[in-house]
Length: 253
Image 1 (cartoon, one colour):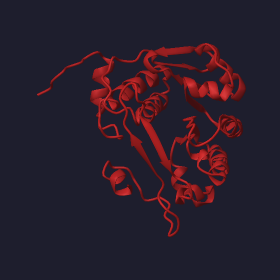
Image 2 (cartoon, helix red, strand yellow; image 1 turned 60 degrees about the horizontal axis):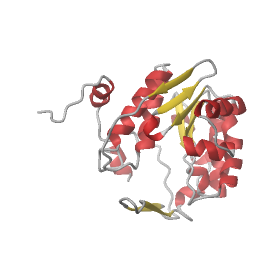
Image 3 (cartoon, helix red, strand yellow; image 1 turned 60 degrees about the vertical axis):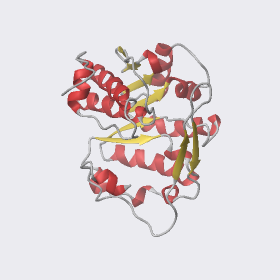
């Protein structure tokens, strides 16, 4: 797995290794309407479930502008739940901005446990990202999208709250302005990883201090990801910008 990441030019020099434990995995049983796609997790007692904040190379992390975390991590174990909170606190103490995607997984924990963990973590987060249904888990109720993002913003005081809304695109709120971006008509090949692709595009926009750009890049990257069989979005910046600009082609040669 580390070699696979390194192949894309990612520096893996600070990956934490251990001689004990096992690698957590998950399997996917692909479905077709009306049978749903099912995910089977096998992550109990994995090495990652024992990770603590002190294991990390904070000198390396301190060089970043943003630290991005997923809500799956605190669901893996009590240790990971505490570690996630410790990590966001350490990052903020070093002056980093923190991004957190709720990423609720009902097969890993109950809504009450997730909500309790998020309520401890989110006051330390600059960017809160949530699928619309995950935001309902956080709030314990369903409501209109603009109301949802405003409620989350009021409760945790981040810089930005972003909400993904499936076929309706995405929305965001920064305390002053409400943002919205449409999605694209796509033929889904593999939807796994689309949320991560959205997060990457959104963070790109925020690195440029532009929330609207982040939503547009996030939607485009998520749409392109869903056309790719692999979980990693093998796309180039030019692909994203062409889609945003409406320069769509069925064949390039």
